[in-house]
Length: 166
Image (cartoon, rainbow, N blue to C red; front, top):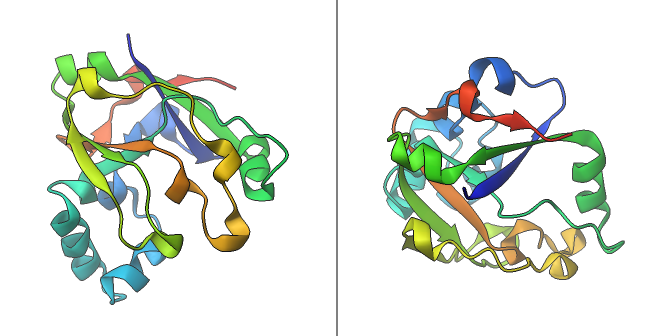
């Protein structure tokens, strides 16, 4: 079992509808608009999929829970104001739900110059994450914390695979 974690705002429907990828979620595309140089959703999805195939149908996840070390107020807000969910990545791959795993291990502030590497299940790095490097005042939150993007065959993880942690 390879347990992965995902944070979501309270009041979500994950335990009913599953964990939705970017395109299916209907969430704001604002975090990507400046990098895609457009506000048009279809063009943003195209930009996402040009960074790696299937990104618009992916979700991000961590190999551990956030370890807040008193260093960044946004991390504390995520821990305090979000719900934590987990799932078994090995099971999702075995059942054909995850079609690819991409590791994002760094980018510049604002998400520019992202470093993605396609990895296999046995290459997922579960060593401790660098929470101490987070600095939201410099727009360096998940830009400095290794995390994984899972490309989902149907754009979501069904609820039956997901466990609420908190």
